[in-house]
Amino acid sequence: MAQLRASYAARNRNILYYSLSIILGTVALSYGSVPMYKMICQQTGWGGTPINIHDTGSGSLADRLIPQTHAPRLRITFAGATSDILPWKFVPQQREVRVLPGETALAFYTATNKSDEDVIGVATYSVTPAQVAPYFSKIQCFCFEEQRLNKGETVDMPVFFYIDPEFLRDPNMKGIETITLNYTFFKAKYDKNGHLSPIPTPY
Image 1 (tube, helix red, strand yellow):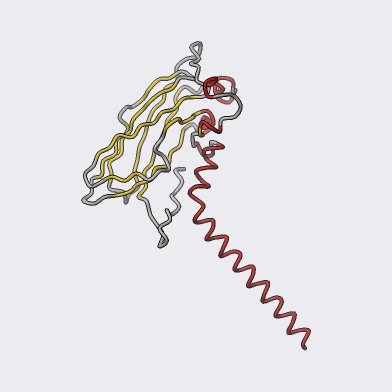
Image 2 (cartoon, rainbow, N blue to C red):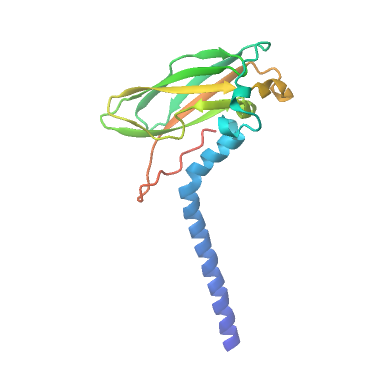
């Protein structure tokens, strides 16, 4: 009987440890999901997310920023949206730009807080066609950073980017002439400890 009780006690301890591990893992994942999502997307181009210029592989940035004048210009179009609960107007200032692979380009979005109170927003972004994302490299971007707009305030938000010349050497990019950069702003939410809650993915 004593052996049976010891067996039950050991099993109960294992169940308790397992349950605690799941709870702690869930909490850690919720706190780390935003930075992890940002890091993974920027390193891999996952889901159409443009990658960070520091993670584009071998070769210096100067080597990649050489306009490929022998190639046709690519048409880059812009789109913007907000979540239903964010009282902002958010639109691109230009419909499109045309760039050569290896050529830098600067575009702007405009955000206006239409509410009667200060609001903090956070933007996600993606590129279509999604397979172009590994070659769409941002130099400056307002994505994943908290943007605070005072009531009635309007701000311009720059996006500085280029298309990596390796785009031309990838057979999967053949026939792609138009690329769309899309941003979606969400209202920032915080948990009781003041941590930024996970934001929805844009895809």
